[in-house]
Image 1 (spheres, rainbow, N blue to C red):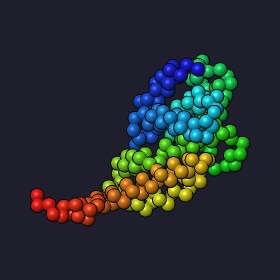
Image 2 (cartoon, rainbow, N blue to C red):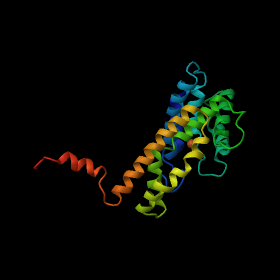
Image 3 (tube, rainbow, N blue to C red):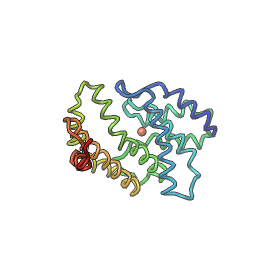
Image 4 (cartoon, helix red, strand yellow):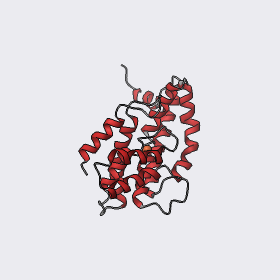
Length: 217
Ligand SMILES: [Fe+2]
């Protein structure tokens, strides 16, 4: 496959759009690029000697959310990708790319029929929504929906942690769950610090005061 050309098509179709009015321009183009990189990392850990599907996984990642924002976006995305990449892939490549896209959002039914490649895609896609991205989304959602600074702190401190178990359970591989745990710990830390600074407090105030002892400046 001509990945340079296909990436250019991804940018032309998604680079200046957003999936929701309150989300940033190009959100699903950049999410697709990050997902492809996360897939590379996970594939190297899970299937270190199998690079056979790397190009399929990369193209599926770039385009998987092309119809995000629509109902049944995964199935509609697969149909859309079939229509725009037909000239650039073989029938078998297109079949594999569209199968990944069409089922990527099914995290709830029995996934025993899903291939390891589909599961790697699912985990990479999911993991891109957590950590710093959790915080980014919380901020833009707040502005786009007329909520307040205090609402963000409340969400980070009280709502977001209640979702951890659900999101963790939706991941397919142990390494994905470990990555999730690390990202979730960062978000909890950020929420703790924001709840202090958001009330005019100083993070680690006592340590700062201690470090000043004996200093006359
Ligand atoms: Fe996605």
